[in-house]
Amino acid sequence: MFPMLTVLSMFYYICLRRRCRSGSRGEPLGGRRALVDLGHRSSVPVSVEVEQYAKEVLDFSSHYGSENSMSYTMWNLAGVPNVYPSSGDFTQTAVFRTYGHWWDKCVSARTPFRRTPPSFHSRDFLELAFEEQVFPTAVEVLETYHPGAIVQILACSLNPFTQNPPTDVRWEVLWSGEPTKVLNPQARQFSPSIRPLSFPTNLLRVEVNSSLLEYYTELDAVVLKGMRQRPILALYSMPTIHINDLSDGEDDLTETGSGALCCRMNASDHKQSHGNGYFDKLPYELIQLIVSHLAVPDLCRLAQCSKLLQLHCCDPLQYVQLSLQPFWSRLSDAALSHLQPRCTLLQRLSMSWTGNRGAITAAGFCSFIRACGTSLVCLELSCCHYLNEACVEVVCETCPHLQELDLSSCDRLQPQAFTHISRLARLRRLILYRTKIEQTALLSILTFCSELRQLNLGSCVMIEDYDVVVSVLAARCRNLVSLDLWRCRNLSERGLGELVSGCSFLEELDLGWCSSLHSSSGCFQLLGRKLQRLRKLFLTANRTVCDNDLEQLAANCPALEQLDILGTRMVSAAALRKLLQSCPRLRLLDVSFCSQIDTRTVQELSSLFPNVSIKKSFTQ
Image 1 (cartoon, helix red, strand yellow):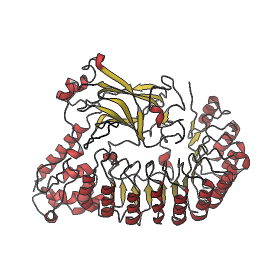
Image 2: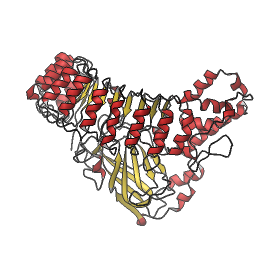
Image 3: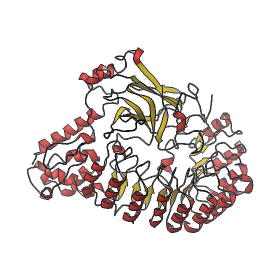
Image 4: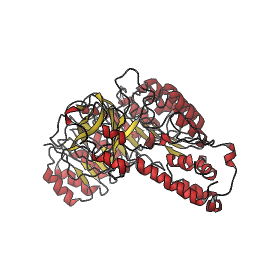
């Protein structure tokens, strides 16, 4: 066993290794690494540098636009700039679905996972393929509106255009940083200093966090510059230590071909032993509390210090909540297999963004869920493209207590897979944003999952008749508090009337870009009278919203906190003032492209109501 001094030394060693891994934030590391940072671009002859724009957008987590158009979609990032160097709100750019802290303050906000590494800031991502593989010398992102959201840029060893992809797909961080708030919303060219790579790449991933921004960030194009031949100075770069590189020859450690995420705990390790200094005098619960502050890779490292610490680091109570999303680039079937003995008490699991391009197979996922999913109440699987019908079926068979399921942007999941979800009778939160769920499967879910409180059907383009859907919702899910119908274009006034009459407890309702709704029918006034608990209402891009609608909200919805009426032509400054006076809790009001509300009016109202963030976008 290790004495106390050795344990502390191991802690110091862990911290040192972590610093080596995260030295991309502009901190000089000295020695050879400092030499590489100074020469990352100047060492390369300009005459042989290749400059290319993105050829194709391969994947992304969300976008503001429609699945059937190009306005505000991530697909606008392919090719040459459409807007730059102009600044402002343009439909030809790529825009993510959310910004700021507003979505975190809603009823539908997800509960954060404990133990998320403080260095993990990403909330959205996009992946871009370029024509030619190069050794990167620079990456330039053209931000045309509210810049500052980019927190990480990565490169992949895989060539997405080859027929025979390599078995070992590697992702390396070119640059990482923290979320920033850029006061100037004007266009800029973001080109951070990047690390040298040991392999050529034509696949980049950009990760963003818009939580500090005042409005939507907009991206116009991405430029990859690089050399066809490996620059000489790249040979001297300091090796980066990743969580999958941790392995050694000890008998009590698991070794795999790609390195081990976790160590194996032998039966003999359960025996209490001595020789751990003052750790032997600490109560078991106190050591558990100390260890509970470590992220999964650090638990794996600490478990290698001594059998006592291994016992604590492998205790299933340390894995009641487990977010693997921060480690999406390193997670594999083997890592899931080694985690299984620790996760017997698992209740909340996030595997969002993980396992794509063969890192995790459907069989590996099913094996893990069968072994660890019986107590799950929350499962997040956003952007997991390895999922198939068998995976969803296993989840629904194995996890009878599941209350939260997130399948957002699983846009490659077959429509028939969703039919199994109706077996999860205890579901309270279901996120189906950008999925291909069809109407028959959704009606079955709503019929049997009557305890639903939060439902997201944003951009579900395969649903034929939303009037039928909301009619069943009103009859079966009467305790619904949050409903997202973003871009559900065939919802009519009749359907909305049934919805607000049957689901009177709604606190959050997103009807953004539901263009088939018309204020002249009185549907929005009825909404205001029926939903008196309303805290968030998005009527984005409905040009018919008028003063009478706002008067009903002012008279009946005193708890209103967020209102988006972007694009209406029929709301006056007087109606806005009355609303602001009647809704003291209002904090967000979006009046962008409202033709009767000019910048001067916004400035006057902002001075009168300083607690309200009034949004008015611009183009120039």
